Image 1: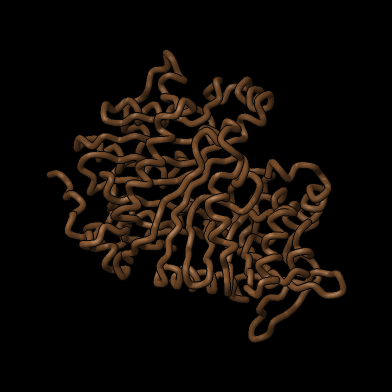
Image 2: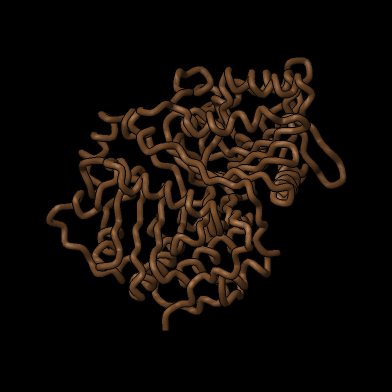
Length: 461
């Protein structure tokens, strides 16, 4: 029996947009499964990363099941995170109702040593990536935010990310469709079969997880409507829009910071407060000056990012550290997410292991944003990013409540400056304690971050 279509009677009379913020990892998996199961015509999926792990295979199974019902599936994946080969994508693509394309791909495939050589020789072209994320079912429901498709985004890994998605119905879904179409039809999006001539694909079933008791996966909901109702339903608002950088950004065309130019006027309009969450935060001289000017006008500016102990990307933290004192002296409030008790894998680049992965901001009680864009040079100038911006007091209040919980002294360090030294404040039982060193960060982390502070690599971070 075909899955039920997403009903039109969920849309109110006004042609606005209905939004639900999803902050729980298990809920984020459930809403994608339910949207896929209710699709009857199309699934359009675009992601920076889709790992061949438990979560990746589970969602691939939902995609394959939808294709088996006659749903036309298009999958667009950025090519930077391919682990070893294209076998997983070729297998999915072998289904007649599924087409897989890779964005800005390397010319050499399957883990070849020459592929890595190509990445070195084309380093500036290859580091420009499609970092956008969207899950669209029947052009009626969209899921936009910061999560990729991998275990760590859905609570299934030893170290998991804290992230946000927004479920969308109504007018803003058309924005999301338009973003997908621009990237799907761009010349940088190439069919995976075209990149692997003569390679025989395995059967589609080889790319998916086997059947299992999936009742816990949908959080007990039998339908998307039931899931949404159990979480308070959609907040319908007139002013919501999904924005993205143009795909030509990754080719160095059409400007370096299109999305930020759209968002910055909203941010600097803050009259009372601007709150920013970004796991990788490098404001640069210009950004530091902008934030300082907002404070001088009488508004508070609060920023939450990863601590050195929590981050996996020490290079980014090293560049960010160059601006901490200037920001604190200007009156910007800084918080750094505390590490978990588990050991983390640290890399110079990538996103494996950081606890904080949310990219969002709020302006007063008026404007909110959730998306894929970090506040760093890479997102602003190199990667193609996307997100949803909305003006709705209820949604902004929920986002602010989430932000307040994430900067609680049990969760994040509060930074201060005294006699030109930075201090970190955290809860220890009933007391707030202070330290003058990067908390819980080993010598290797501190040394690497210190070295990066002096290297001319900020524009690539």
